[in-house]
Picture 1 (spheres, rainbow, N blue to C red):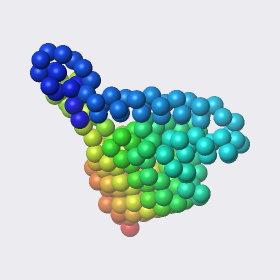
Picture 2 (cartoon, rainbow, N blue to C red):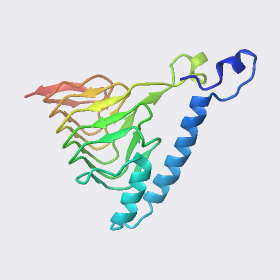
Picture 3 (spheres, helix red, strand yellow):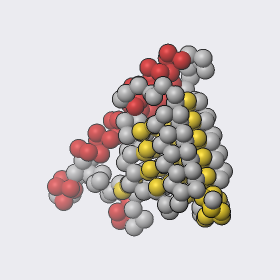
Length: 186
């Protein structure tokens, strides 16, 4: 996605493009909603449900549990199946889409990132790139894990605490280490 309007930029003007402006407005709205969510009393179920509905654009599935603080930059592209559990302090940068399958458990301070910038210095301030994250059923993601753009995680996989996942994860496997490496299969 270009950050600046390509036609105006060709004429030397740095004006934000329409898609980037719309994304930026949604980021501000999602930040406002999560700020309100994260200061509610823990037992204010009705208040949390109302704010999650605004964040996600639909009600939370009935058997989904999310412990604040909770952070998202978009919210509207976060798809949560039944029996998903998300612990405290997790971040979902979901502009390109994140799907968590049924029974997924997410440990505290896990981070899901679907957007980024090109590595090339000339393009870094010009474009955003991204890809969706897909997490299959019954996956366990440990505390502090980071899931990067475009990753698919197979059913029954376990992501160890602190792991950075940059590549797809096969089903029924344990992935651990600074750059997620399959350590065991079952």
